[in-house]
Structures are given as structure tokens and as C-alpha cells.
Length: 436
Image (cartoon, rainbow, N blue to C red; front, side, top):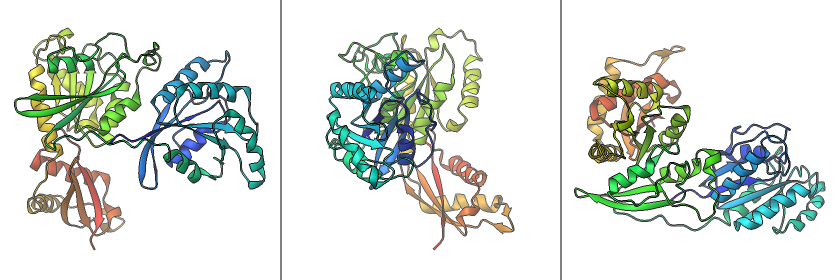
């Protein structure tokens, strides 16, 4: 089931980024007393009482002619549109301002649950200052302090009370769910239509015409699939993606529900930094990945072009060295038949479980052949290993002292496992554990 989404919204300089950093537990957002410093939405994951959620930090909404204000407002409005629950943050030291009232008007129109958080209430004596905020019309104001971390538990309790009770669509365990992610206008919707053989998804050369996530069941050669795409134009006339370029959160939602993720690249335009960021979301989520180079019909090529392009992809996407690459054209359907077999292989490997005795033969042979180096006179000793989960395959390696497991040696063990079992298309995870 997709994680619920929380957006932190408010005028500039009320402490949104400080609260965001407190909730996610690390300093992701820039914190500085300059209005407008957070121009773009920032996404991360949070956890409260063993429940995970996605959280968005936004730039402040303000009316005026200062640089970036129009862009900041658009970013905030997109975050509001994507959120299940909104934290409306105000500054308790400054009271209700005209800008707060403008933000409130925007939130009224959103028809989303809103929790009003009054920040910078750093001591109990200041709590009497929050009552003026009832006038904003969002019920009881919740006093919090970002600088001291006060009141965040009560705030998150209130937020969780508004989360929708959703149940994920149930499919047969053998059904392969795959999604398509990538920059706007790389041909994701055209690729879906090419696979389905019909115009099921709106196709446009205007970036951002694909909006809402839908599931499309599909069968081919005895295998059942569900294509998770973001399709369908909003009734609202404004297409926000034309300004924000890419809706990250929709990709995250699709990734969470997928077995396999297709990272779609524009073969004609080439690779840009944003492609690597998008692919990183799927890698971090532990999903099986296939890199799809679309628009291959538009690329001038000879017998070496594909090989050279693959080298370029491997150089840019070193963290996806396990992901197979498929070259095709959704427009002409050339090589489209090569895609599903690769998806099948990636899905099978993502769910692959290996026998413990065979795994240990591989691991112990690898350790004998290449013992771990010493660290301050201590050497890592590997006793045995076992696979603890699938999707992605994860392995616990039991050792004398887990802190001696260096990243490079972990990588060595991963390479030995891949050499023995393949695992093409899927990341694998290795955890060092102390032998009990």
C-alpha cells in the first residue's frame, strides 16, 4: 500500500524546514532565516509509532513581487494537491498575519484535512499566545517548538488521525506489477500504449499531461501483469508539471507498489542528471529495475552505437550495474517484443530464494580465496550466511564483529553471490550480524 503523504505548508520563515528535519531525523532541508530559501519541494520518509509516511517540505507561500515567489507558490500548491494531510505552520511569536490568512484561503479550497501547528512556542508561558490562531478556521492550534523538538509527538498523533484507511488492490502472487518512471516526455505513456496495443493512456508532447496513478491489468503469453502508470488529465486546467518538471511523489507511490520499475530514458536526448536522481528512488526502494532506452528509432546509429550507448549508461548509472538495458521505440514498436522477457527475468530474480547450503558453499569458498583484510589488528571472520527475505533478496552474514565488515568486502561478497546465482535486474542486500 502506498505510504500516506504529509505536506508542511505555510508562509516563509515560520520554521517549516526545521520541523521537516526533526520529523525525518536528519538535516535534509536548508535551515536559514532568509524567507524563500526552500524554493523547491523536498521529499523524504518519516516514521511514527512503526508507521511510515512520506513528507514534503515546501517553499513558503507569499503574495508579492519578490524573486521566486510565483514559483514557490506553485510548488506549494502542487504539494497540497499531492498530500493526504496538510500541516499548516504559523509563527507563534508573530501572531496571525495577512500572509497566514492568504495561505488559509488556499487550504480552504484544497478540501484536504489540515492540522494547524503554531511553531516557536518554546516554553509553557507562551501557550497563551496561540489562541488568536483559532481565527484561521482550522480548529485547535497545536503548540510546537522546532528548535527544541517540543510537541511533535502530539502533532504527529493528530496528523495520523486524518490518514486515509486504504487497502491496496490485491492481485495474484504470480502477477508481475511494474511501473514506468522517468522525466516528462521520454515516452512513458507511449510505451504503455505500445505494450497494450491500444490508446489507453493520454499521449502528448506537453510535459506533465500524465497525472493520476492507475492500474492496467494485462496478460501476455500466459503471464499476468499490472502496469502501474500515472495517466489521465486533471479536470483542473493548470498543468503544474510544466513548471516543476517532474512529480517525484507520484513516482515514489508507483515504485512502492511495483515489483519491477522501468527507468525510461530518452535515447534521442541522452542522459541528464535528473535521470540518475529518478533511478535512485527505485534503487533505494529495493525494486527490480530495467533501464529502457526509448525513441531508439530517432537515433542515428551504426553497428557500434548500441554498445557505445550502453557503456555510457553504465558509466552514469554505476549503482545500477545489475539492471539490464533494453533499446526500443514505442512509436514504431521496433524491439518492443524484447521488453517483457526482460521484465519477467527481473521479477523472477527479485523473488528468488537460494538454498542455504549452496549459499554457504559460495560464501565460505569466497572467504577462503580472499580473506578480509585486518583492521587495527583485528580480522573479520565469516561463519555462515542465510537468506532472510526476498523482494529484494537479502542475506544475513554472521561474523565475529559486524563493525569489521567494510563496504568493499561487502561488495566482494555481493559479487560472488551474483556470479553464482545471477540476480540480474534486482538489487541484493547484505547485512553483517554478530554470531550468537
